[in-house]
Every structure is written in structure tokens, then in C-alpha cells.
Image 1 (cartoon, protein in one colour):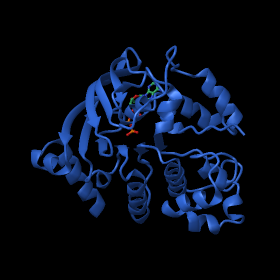
Image 2 (cartoon, rainbow, N blue to C red):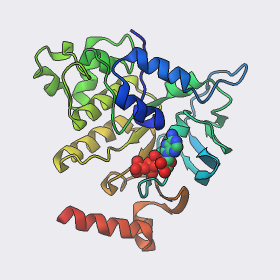
Image 3 (cartoon, rainbow, N blue to C red):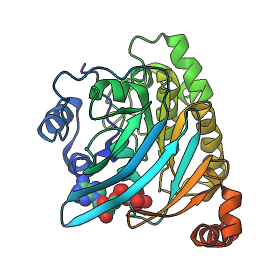
Image 4 (cartoon, rainbow, N blue to C red):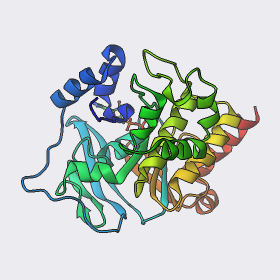
Length: 295
Ligand code: ATP
């Protein structure tokens, strides 16, 4: 079995193509190889050190030159802290995550981890340091155990179970016909959006990376499920350098810093309290969400 975990929603166009045509990992592998956007610099070394501060320094990016997506974006996620990004659909939020995971290289500026430009170290070492809980987790046509253990190949059943318990998906797994041996994915048991996200959280807990990206699902979960996932996520992000792409503001209130992104520009930034006092875009979004939530 090819050891490959691809957070598909971070792959943009590739994702859309695969969603239609993809049924197995081999095809995914071929497709990925063809679409490879970035390569290791000659002689690149692995990311080193124990400082996992993430910095975006004056980052600009476009998928095609005629259409700039990110414009001079700068922010820092101090090691162990959480930065949340909010903003309208299409403003470039997920693109930030794709750049940090180095699916693409920035056009201008740089992204560093512990002061090291991610273009100058090996791609594999960057990806080892990062765990992603994507919007739409792709599960392999394999057992649920394999799918969770993918976070750390070679993990024992006990470790997989501990991660599943922490992500609150253990009871669900035990209720399936073959428990951890149940096949999931396209050709197996279909999981709901919330269950898939929990599986991804379990995978990330098992991987235990120093950096976590959480791309919150846009699809509506019921509010009890949503609150539960948020608390499980908090678990997974505990003490880690975390980038949260948020669609619901309730996820971001405790963030070290909140960035409001509009058309690829950070138009406001601060803590929840600071942004409310400002009475700007964030405060408006907060009011709107309160009204929506009470409806
Ligand atoms: P949402 O909240 O809907 O997830 P977002 O803020 O995360 O949106 P992005 O996914 O970062 O937005 O997309 C920003 C812009 O870049 C969008 O206009 C999108 O159409 C475009 N885009 C995204 N991926 C690609 C790609 N692979 N090729 C070309 N354009 C792309």
C-alpha cells in the first residue's frame, strides 16, 4: 500500500478533478506526480531545530498572473499559539494553508518555520512537521485503523484507539460491523462529514506534529456536533503552532490573533476583544453570526 496522505481540499484544481474521477490511491499518486508544483532545492536539508514559529513575510501569490490572490500578507504564529483567519469565501484563506504546506511556492516574500525559509528545506520535512485537518477528509479504501494510523505508520492498535477516543470517534467505530477492521472510503462504509473530520483529528493526534492546520468545514454540521468537534480540535491543537481557517467565528474567540482577509489583503487584525472594540468588519461579522445563530 502506498503510504500517502493527501489533504485533498488543499489541492485546489487537482482536488476537483480527483473528486470526479478518483477511486483509488494509485490514481491519486499518478495525478499528484503529474501536477507536482514544487521541488526540493538542490541539496536541501531537513527542517531543523525545535522552534516552530511560523512567519508569513510580505507574501504575495497568484495561481495565474492575471489574478493576484494574496497581496503582501504578513503575520506570525508564535510557537504554540493559534492564529485564526476569517473572511468571505474566495478571499484566499485556504490558499494560506496550501502555501504553508508547500503545495505551491509564494510569488513574493517568504514563509519561514523557525526562521528557515520553507523553500530551502526538504518538502518532506515540512510536511512531517505539519498535521492537517482538512475541510473534506479523504479516506482510503482500507480499514478505519489504517486510515487513522496513517498519521503515524507503525502505530500500535492501542495508540490508534487512544487517538480515536480523544477525537471521540472510538464509540462510533466500535458500533460498526468489524470495529477497527471495518473498511471505509468509497468502496466501504461511508462516514458523515463530522465522522470524517473526527477521523482526521484522530490521525493528527496520532501524528502529533508541532504545527497544525485546521481548515474548518464549510458544510453545516448540527450545532451540537460542531461544538463537540471544536472541543476535540482544541485538544489536538493544545500547545501546537496552529493556523485555523475559520468559517464560524465561535472557533476563533480564543485565538492569539485573528486576521480578517478580504480579497487577499489583511484588512483587520487583533484579538477577539480588540476587534469588537474596533467596530469594524469583524464586529459586523460577529453581529451577523449572532443573529444567524439565534434564528
Ligand atoms: P472558502 O471560504 O470558500 O473556502 P477561501 O477564502 O479559502 O474560500 P481560497 O480557496 O483560498 O479561498 O481561494 C481563493 C481564490 O483562489 C478563489 O477565487 C479561488 O477560485 C481561487 N483558486 C483556488 N484554487 C485555485 C487553483 N488551483 N487555481 C486557480 N484558482 C484557484
